[in-house]
Length: 601
Image (spheres, rainbow, N blue to C red):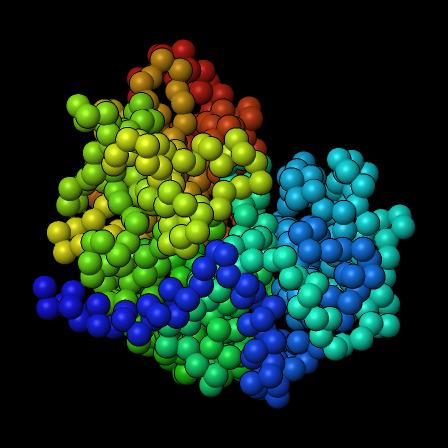
């Protein structure tokens, strides 16, 4: 009880600021930037390569974008798309559009072809600011767009133009050069409310086409304030960003925290495991935002004498798994880790303020969170209900789906679910009659558990957990245990259908370290030591090339579709062979015997 009281006392100072934002209010992110520009005009807001940009300079750059937007006919409530890699112009562009109330669709720079076409169509934007470094990606769909789009090409001195220029593309720099840098005036966003859209942020597309989530000024301000509080961020801090700015982790949590605190952002174009700590030292960073996968990449780097030679005191992010948590903290000397749980479109969040290994946090009092874990049946993809027809909340250590209560009115900030641009997609995420007749909850799609002390732990994604030999198998937990095998850089686990077999058989897609070859016998021994028989992968695919999302997740949908058919897969495939005590090459003949039922699995 005493530790919960201590946690409550720690959180109390943040509550007034977090409670100050209301959906119907008038404060926007543009107001935040202008307030910081007035308070610390000469203080650095951005470090990028050899460039240094102050709050005053960023505000002036955003003003030029705002005046350009007005000249281009954009008005409050319109949508413009932004496709650009991490660089200072990215922030100036969306901040300037926000000054005149324009919603910005943050397009994932990994998208090409059908996925990119779908994202642009979903945004329903009439204008696209396109970084020249993304011309190669845009060219894959430029001739097949679903609606007319005026392209404004932003040059890139670092990479130049990577593909053909679209016909009738306008020069973005030339258009900005003639614009004034004074504030355009808040009257251009007079109809805008705090709860209105700032962004469309897209889901990663690992399991299908990306969906555009509504993301309001309210959420940006609230998340930024919470992140700054969690890190104890102040103007003297330098927050290092190697995550893509189109994603909520880098573009909202990190940028929002820095703007909230008046801190400095040190920005890198793309994550580099070998250059990460050199960057941290170069910029004298004190904090950084992480994704669990890149923490694993950093751990896979050769140890150096200067691993602890930096000023980083805290890191915040999600996905840092228990198997490397303490090792990472010890090796790099990080005092504070703020693991959190949340989703771009989610209506609930948790933060681990107590350095509890593996946990995404807890709440000191049950009543101050809208997060609950309810029973979920993996096999039937349903939520068991009691005699009263309502869902059943999980007990301690029981795995279930995390849901967030949705308030009955949009005037309430806490628990507000903003949904997607697609009504159908929005409706699929809402579960009704959960705790009482007529209520509604946001379905996270995540399986979590809570221990007897109230700490929450992420278990797996729904759809990733599968059933085999009558047991539920968590792909996340299996991948975590497999990753201890020497020579692996990345592991992805999923279930594949086998004709005539109940459930789905486990399959592991492996990315080997450079210069490493797959040893089927050694891998078999490792699997047998760390996993029960039902959870051991039946099939292994050794990836010669891998496509990952901007947040370092392997794209799983193609892997699941291709399955274990050597005729459809160009990579080496292996089958678990208990008699041989090894994973043996999976040939066409073996595949035929499996699918015909001659080899029972």
